[in-house]
Length: 305
Image (tube, rainbow, N blue to C red):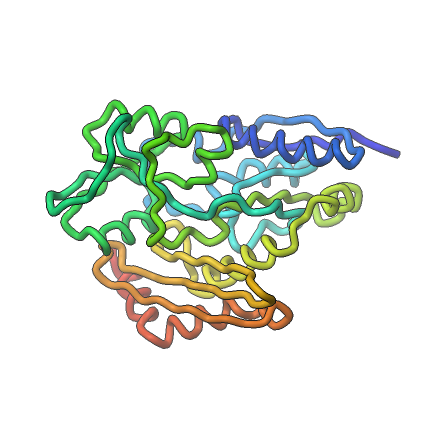
């Protein structure tokens, strides 16, 4: 017997866009669905930097609870927000084709940002973006920026910042990318950035079958490798870890790095494997990075207050 699939989502414009995208994909394959709105801790505390909150899954916990309590059937997340070990009883149902993985700098409206020798004031709540920016521009200053994408864009206009860093996919999906935004091609993304994941209960065969129709194997493979890399390094919101895996010509290549929080120290790794042999690539890259200076950076981070 058919049923209406209840899709859990946060209330932000981007989260609703993602949920409606999944609703449309379900409809395309003959499944009825409706949205159920749930508030997350990450939406209610907009002042504390994410790396100070220190809770993995801050944007997913409330939806996980609703899913386990039977209030919703599936949940839709930005995959980079999902803890590398999901809550017991919850499994991946589908990963959508990846959008842009890049970070972008958004200067104030009408401003063409050109970094000179003069120190700039940049806003971000991401410790990863902060560390990579300071590694490249050590004389700059970073300020905290929280809120949904609409709120953050407004704050850029109202502040004295030179610019703020955003995920390209988030702005592009809801047509809010400013014309003067700059792709930060040199900045490695968060693991799974640009990917959307659908999760459901591990015993829910109906939802697993429904979501299998739009699962993207390449995105799932690459995002999974990146998340393995993150998990192997014991990384969370307070650890500046980046990774990008890409499939090309039958091979998967992963590039990853770890930085000290102040950006002064940085270790990088790049590895390649055949798609058929790539399942352990993330763990292998993490091991190589740890053996070549990454462990020392991790030790510094762990002993910081």
